[in-house]
Amino acid sequence: MSGDSAASAPGRSGDRPERPVGGKRLVKRWRLLFEGGLLQGGVQGSPVLRLFMRWVRRPLLPVMRLWRRNIQLKVVVTTLLMSLGVVLLLGFVVIGQVRNGLLDAKVKASQSQATGGFAVAKQKADEAATGAGDTAGTTGGRQSQNLTSWMSDLVESLSSGGQGAFDVVTLPAGDNNGGGGRGPRASGQVDPTASVPDDLRTRINGSATAAQSYTRITYTDDKESQPALVIGKQVNDPNNDPYELYYLFPLTQEEKSLSLVKGTLATAGLFVVVLLGAIAWLVVRQVVTPVRMAAGIAERLSAGRLQERMKVTGEDDIARLGEAFNKMAQNLQLKIQQLEDLSRMQRRFVSDVSHELRTPLTTVRMAADVIHEAREDFDPVTARSAELLADQVDRFESLLSDLLEISRFDAGAAALEAEPIDLREVVRRVVSGAEPLAERKGTHIRVVGDLQPVVAEADARRVERVLRNLVVNAVEHGEGKDVVVKLAAAGGAVAVAVRDYGIGLKPGEATRVFSRFWRADPARARTTGGTGLGLSIALEDARLHGGWLQAWGEPGGGSQFRLTLPRTADEPLRGSPIPLEPKDSRRNRGPGDAGLPGGGEDKRATVPVQPGGQASPLAPMPQRLA
Image (tube, rainbow, N blue to C red; front, side, top):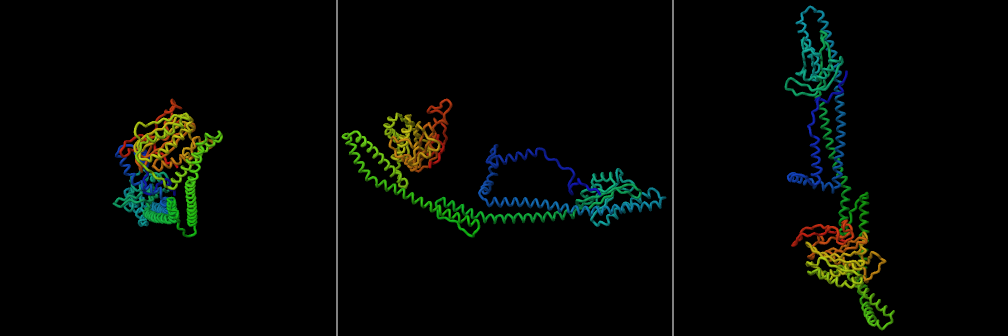
C-alpha cells in the first residue's frame, strides 16, 4: 500500500495564504522607530510623536537602570530565558515523537482494517456475480435494482464492524456520474464528496493499488467536522464495473491524546522554569550578598571609616575573600595611620624648626646688616662677601616665611580675611613692584582689561602674593619678551591671567609646576632668589578663596597662568571669564597669522546667567588641579 508522502498535517489546507504586500517595510519602519527613537532618547518628527515616545520610554528607564546595576537580576533572567529555550526545544522534540508514534500506530491499524475491508468487498462482489449468473434471465431494471441494493448492503455491512471507529464511503469511478446504482454512498451521515480529497481520487483512478491521505470528515447534519485518515482503492462490483471504496478513520482520539501530552509538557515545563529561576535566585544570592557587603564596606572605607570590616562565616571561597578583604582593610588602616603620623610629625617639625630658626636668624640678620653697612671700609673681596651674605640672609628669611606659611596651610590654620577689593589696584601694585626686574630683563609688562572695575570679595594680601609670584615668574622665564596681564569679569567670576612668550612648559608640566621645590629645568639658576614654594603657596591661597589657579604652556610658545576667583565669597565657580589656553597659541592660530600674538579665533563657551548678572562668554569649566 502506497503512502502519501506529501500529505499535510490533519486539518491543514492545501493552499497557503499570501503575505500582505509591504509587510517587510512596515516591520523595518517599526524597528527603526524603536532602535533610533524609543531606545536612544528621541524621535525626529512632530511634537505629539516625541511626547508619545517619551511617555512610552519613561517606564522603561527604571527597568534598564535596574538591569545594568543588578547582577542577580541578570543571572536569574538569563537562567530563565535559557531554561525556557531548553524546555521549548525538548517540548517540540517530545511532542513530535509522540505525534509521530500515534500517527504511525493509527496508520498501521487503519491499513490492516482497510485491507480486510477491500478483500471482503471483492469477495461479496464475486459471490453476487456468481448468483447473478445463475439468474441470467432477469431484466435490466431488475439488475440495476439489485446492484443498488447490493451497494447499500455493502456499505452497511462494512461499516457495521467499525462501531464508530471508521466510516465507509463509495463513489463512482472516473467520469461515471452514479448511473446504474453506483451513486455516492456513506455511513454515519458522512458527506462523501466533501470528505474525500480530489487528489486522492485522482491517484486511485490511475492505479490499482490502495492510497491514503489526511482529510477532514464533513457530516451532512450539524455535527462538527474532525480530522481523519482516509484510505481508498478502486474495486469492481458484481457487474465487473469499477467503483471507489474508501475507509475514513477519525483521528479525534489521537488529537485528544496529543493535546493531553501538550498540556502536561506545558505545565511541567512552566514548573521546571519557575523552579530553576528560584534555584538560580537562591544560588546567586549566596554569592552576590557577600559581594554587595564588600562593595558597601569598600564605599565606607573610601569615605574614611577605616574601622569597617566584613562579617566572615564558614570556610569556603567567599569566607576566604572576606578574610582577605579584612586583612587588606586592616593593613590599609595601619598604613594610613602611619602616613598620617608621619605627615603630622613632618608638619610639626617644619613648624617647630621654622619658629626656632627665627631667633638665630634675627641675630644673624642684625650682624649681617652691621657688616653690610660697613662694607665700604673693607677690601673688595670682603665687601663682596658682605653683599653676598646680606643677599643670602634675605633669601633665607623669605624661605623661612614661606615654610611657616606652608605649615599653616598643612595644619588648616590659614584664615581668610575677605573684603570687596578692586583687582585693578592689586595688579597695579604688583606691576609697579616688578618693574625693576622687568627693566633688567628687558621686558615690558602690559595690562589689558583694566578699563572697567573688577571687584570681588577676596583677601587683598593673599591675592597680591599670588599675582606677584605669577608676574615675577613670567618676567624671569619670559626671555626678555613682553608679559601681558589680563583682567576680566563675567557672571559670578573674576579672573586674572599672566601671559609670557618665553620657554613655555612641556606636556605634563602644567600640573607639576605647582609642586613644592619643583623646577622645569633643574640646571637653571634662580636669578631672583626664589624659594621654590611660591606657586605652591599661591595654589593654596587660590583654594582658600574657593577659586582656581591653573597653568597652560607649550614648548617655545610661552605659558599662561590663570587665577579665577568667585565674586562673592563661598559662591561656587562654574566657569572662568578667560580661556585657559590663550587665543594666540599655536593650535588657535590661523594660516595667515601664524607666529603673531593676538592671532586666531577666540574660542570660548558660555555659562548660565549668574544671579544679578548677565550671561557672558566664559571658558569651559576646568578641573581642579591636584
